[in-house]
Image (cartoon, rainbow, N blue to C red; front, side, top):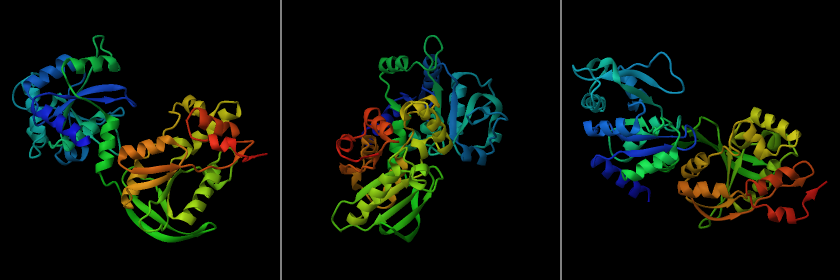
Length: 397
C-alpha cells in the first residue's frame, strides 16, 4: 500500500501535478508540495493562484549551511534563511521563481551564485525526527519518491484568506484531482523505513523476578534513554512483549494513584516465566512529563479525571507515540509478538508501523480505593479493556 501511494505521487509529480500535505495535529494547515528540481512556471502559477500563502523552497538545514546560505536573525518556531533570487531580472516573475528553485536543487550552487534578499523564501528543514512540520515532511517526501531532497511548498488559503480550513482544502484537492497525504502518514512511512535506533550496550540484570538482560540503545528519535528488559524465550515461539511507559510515582515510589507499578511487576513476573521483552519508554504522564503530571494530579485532587486534566493543561488526553517502541523492536529483530496490554491504541500503532501482533493478552494491576476512578476513566474514556479487572475481586481496601 505504502509503495503504491508513493509510486502514484511520483507519477503525479512527473505529470506536473503537486500533492497536498496536511498537518492535522500541529498547525492544522495544508500545503501544496512539488519537487524543486521539476518546478515550472505553470506550477508556480498554480501555487500562487490556488495556494496564496508564502511561496518557499526547502532544503535540509545542514545542506544549506554547508553551501553558505545563512539564517535570518529572527525565527518564530520556523527556520528561515535569507530569501533568494536567480539571474539578472527582478526575481518576482513565476519563471524566475521557478528557476531559483531549480538552481537551489543543484547542490553545486552556493549562496554566491544567488542574489539576496530575493523573492523566494528559503527554509531549512530539520531532521524529520526532530520536527514534524511541512518543511521536514516535504523534503522526506522528495526522498521517498526518488527526487532530490529539495521541495517547493505554499500554504493553502481559502477564499477568505484562512489557512486552517481543511474542508476547503479537501474540496480544492478534489477539484484538481490532487492526492492528499498527511504528515502523520509520512511519519509512519519514515519510521517504518528508517533505522533510528541501534543496540548500544547489554548487561545481565538480576531482579527479584528473575535474571534478565537489559539493553540500551543509540537513539536518534528523541535522545531519551529507553531500555529493553529481555528474558530468552523458547525458539520457534512468539515472544511476549510489554510496552510500559515510565511512571516515576507508580514504578519507583509505589504510588496507589495508578496501577502502573503493579502492572510493571506483573509483566516482569510473566516475562520471567515465559520469556519475552519489556520495553520501558521514558514518556511520563502519558507523554506530558513529570512536572505536568503533578499539575494534572493537582487537578484530580479537585475531582477532574485524568483525561480532562491533560486537556485542561493544553495537551491531548494521551500524547504517546509508539514509534520508539517499534524502532526498539526492529533493532532487536522482532516483527511478530504477543502484546501484553489492555490498550488497543498500542496494538493499532504497532500494526501501522509494521509489527505483527499475533494477539493481545490482558495484563492487570491492582484496584485500590485510590486508583478506582483512574481505572474507570481508562475503561470509559480511553477504552482500555479492563472489564475483567472490575469483575474480579481485586479491589483492595
